[in-house]
Amino acid sequence: MARGLTFRFSTAGLIAVTAFLSGCMVGPKYHTPTAQTPAAYKEVTPENMNQVDNWKLAQPGDTMIRGKWWEMFGDPELNKLEDQVDASNQTIAASYASFMAARALALQARAQFFPTGTTSPSINKTHQASNLTGTSSANASSFTVYDLPFDATWVPDLWGRVRNTVRSNVYNAQASAADFQNVRLTIHAELAADYFELRSQDALKQLLDSTVKAYQESLRLTQVLYETGIDSQEAVAQAETQLDTTLAEDTNLGIARAQLEHAIAVLTGQPPSTFSIQPQPLKFAPPPIPLSLPSQLLERRPDIAASERLVAQANAQIGIAKAAYYPTVTLSAAGGLESSQFTDWFTWPSHFWSIGAAAAETIFDAGLRRAAVQQFEQQYNQTVANYRQTVLTAFQQVEDNLASVRILSLQIDQQDAAVKAAQRNLDIATDRYKLGIDPYLNVITAQTTLLINQQTAVNLRSQQMVSSVQLVEALGGGWGRSQLPSPAGILSRNASPGPGSPAQAGVKTAGSDSPASTQPPQK
Image (cartoon, rainbow, N blue to C red; front, side, top):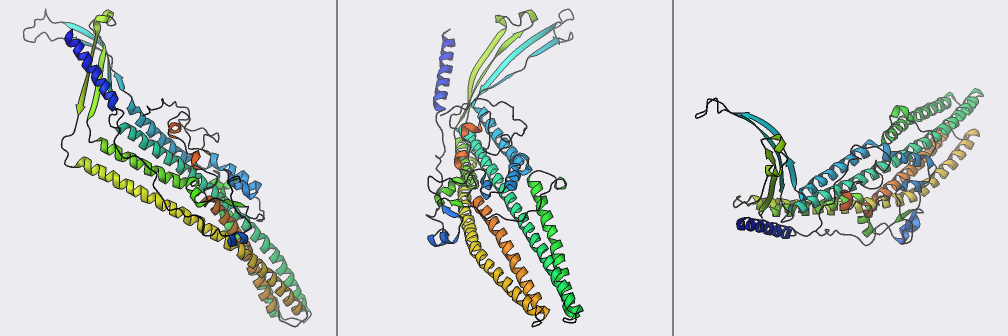
């Protein structure tokens, strides 16, 4: 009796010590790495702000760029197309599945907090051979064993290996959620850019259609003058050549427009053969774009958030590697019912049990663990460098598009002036030709100059719209770091990578109804 009590007190003491040590955790404490952040954007100066109509510095009370940022452009057709993206785009669906897979890894890691229980019930009938030594056929017997065992093992998290593993997988899932948002932002921006380029093709088509009509009228005038003996056959041939060349150029526009329409169809998750957009010339100007401070860019860009979460994951992996230096304790218990008679199987005398503990420690590994720690430390340094490079690239993209929007605004004004001058030159050349002062070649030259300048003006406005879209994308769209799912959210039943997920769009996804287990123990 005394030995039994001693054993029980020893076991209880071991469990108490194990529970106390479970509060310990090795590994470095995580701190968000620093990154060089400018005080202001180079392009945002009072002089430059006056040059661009659609820039404004966002004050604390101003409306920032929202989730459906494309609505700023005021195009109902674009809004309708963008609303189809989250529910139908397959790249977004694949990114969502990647997040859910990362979330499942976090749930797998959390399961290590809890004991593992198994059972293997069995019924075995055994007959002893009668020719065994010392056994006669009369003494040979048959018997049945009814066995219902239960086994449980638990490896307590003494040094934080499991906690760091869970954190590592949760941080990875958060990075995957940020990657999902970055994919969404990229797809929405690509759709908007393709849409405005398609509308610019419609504008070019309208321009060339009107130009063809003008050239047809010029050819008719030249033919009349030739028939009356005022002009030469050479002028008629020149007019015909110019008309045919412009007709071919007008027809060629259909290739780019068809390809852009097909690209938009795929972005919205539709077969190109069943999708079409009615022609409509580009007629929208870039909207006012609120510019936040550079320091806020770190909170607005999903790719920066994803890179930072990977740094946190790498930091947790150092703790996992360091936990290998310490012993592993395994607690085990077994019990059940065993009997040779079915009627006695579930009676108290049939029960059995055992409980115990074991510890394992590596005493020599020739530097294996030390090398593993060094490996993860250098991988951490690598993720820090990648994070800082991502931040630098983000600032570069903002500055690039700020410069593009500003310079294009000036260039469009200058190009509009060039178009007006070319039109005046054509009017003068046409009048002088009608009066017989100048040859028709002067009219052709003036017409060609005007068309080139008009085409340039259309293309510049297309570039301006695309650059405005890319500026919104570079500023992070309508996303914010506060929308990143929390660790508790990652492990919850309704885990989501944030706004725009297929589940929120009403799309049925595999595993969306599967229950999640409870929250992991908190330190």
